[in-house]
Image (cartoon, rainbow, N blue to C red; front, top):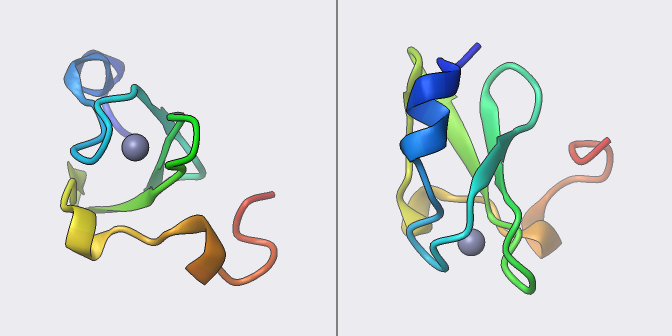
Length: 64
Ligand SMILES: [Zn+2]
């Protein structure tokens, strides 16, 4: 899991909204109309818009 102190310093690079953990290796943007999902690889969040998964691109079930 990601360090809560690190998480508190992170925000979505697309809209600057705070990120919330989604499972063990994902971070979800809480920004209205954004909702990008970022991967965490080797405990490093990949906060790149071009690497993020948009809500409409996500397979069903990944959100739950
Ligand atoms: Zn966002």
